[in-house]
Length: 202
Image 1: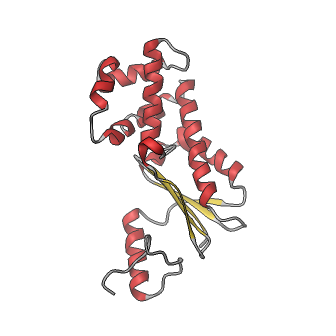
Image 2: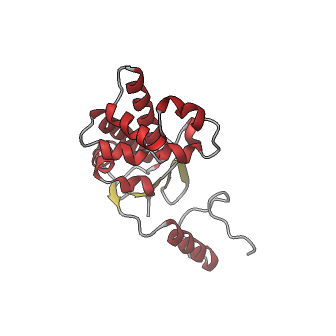
C-alpha cells in the first residue's frame, strides 16, 4: 500500500512509494546525514558531554558522567574515536545513554526531540500525499522507547496529519523473503526499480 518505511539504527534512511514510483530520503552516512539515527543521537550526546567538560553552554553533566563511565576520561576520546573504522557504531553505542538520561536531563531530552524532528522530516519527504498512507518505523533506535517515540509521534502528527503510523509487518529478513517470493512469482504490487527490486538469474 502507499506509505513509507523509516529504518533507524546506527544509520537512518526513509523509503516511500505511491505504488507508481519510489522516493528516498537520507541514508547518507554519519558525516553527511543519517539525521536522527543512533550515530547522530550518540554524537549529539557526546558533544553535550564535551561542552560540560569545557564549561560551555549546552553541556550536560549527566551525559559527561555517562561518557566517562563508558569511554574513560573524555579528554582522550577524540584521539581514541577519530581513527576508528567503526566510528558510527561507537557513536551509536552512546545513544541508549542519551535515552536513559532524557527523563531527568533537559539537554538529553532536547537531543531526542531534535532526533524525532529529523526522522519525521525524512518520513515527510518520502510519504505520498493523500489519505490512507502509512508510516512504519523499524530498527534498533526505535527500541529506545518513550524518550524518543513520544516526541516522534508528535512530530509525525504535525508533519504527516494524513498518514497513520503502523507497526512493521515483520523484521527486515521477513520483508526480504516476502519481496523475493513476490518477485519470483510475479505477484509484486510495488513499482519496479532496478536498484531496489530485481530478480537475479530469472
